[in-house]
Image 1: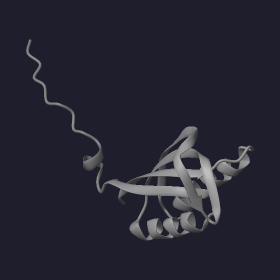
Image 2: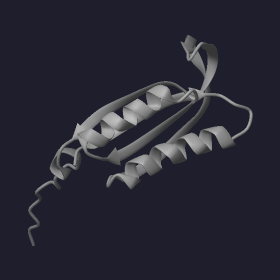
Image 3: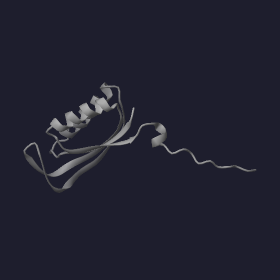
Image 4: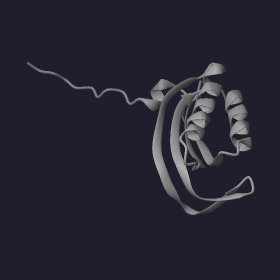
Length: 115
C-alpha cells in the first residue's frame, strides 16, 4: 500500500467538537477500509493567507492539521470524495510519499568499526 501525507485546512469553529469529528471521520474511513493511520498532527488555528470560499461561505481563519497514512488508491479516491463533500473542509491536498518502506526510511549508514 502506498504511503500518503494529507494536509487539511478545515473551517474554524469556536467549539472543538467539529474539528475532532472531522479528524475522527477521516481516520476511521482509512482504517475501516484496511489502511493504517500512522500519525495525526495539529498545527492549530491560523489566519488564511487570503479569503477562501468553500460551500458558499467565505473563510478568513482555518484549523490546519496533517495526517500520515497508508491506503490503497481506490480508498484514496473515496476519501477525496468524502473530503470534497464535507462542509467543514476548506482545502486539502494529498501527497504520495512512497510505495515501499525503502522509499520512506533511509538505510543506516555503513560504518566500519576498527579495534
